[in-house]
Length: 138
Image (cartoon, rainbow, N blue to C red; front, top):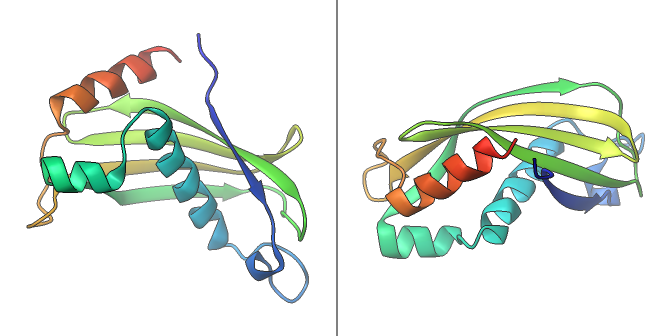
């Protein structure tokens, strides 16, 4: 079994509210960055997938559980794992932690769309196979 993809996050003043606590919608940004970097780490760039294969990925649904607050200047890490792969969608399980303390979890369904019509389409075969391999490692 391999480890989940880990992406570090530093909390800046701009991420927080007046009390120095991370504003709730910013957690979605952190999870998005982690998913994007996971794809990049696997060798797939969003711009290349768009330009060469005519596909984009979009969030269809996301469920977050806000457990504890993140605060200004915290150094956190997100873990991202592909939990389910279907022909046109993926489910990522993500966790944001400070050290070993879980602050937030998310389950995110991502769909593959044709870039020109925004209609659902199959994930390109080479990428689908990579996702299947990655999801079976966990």
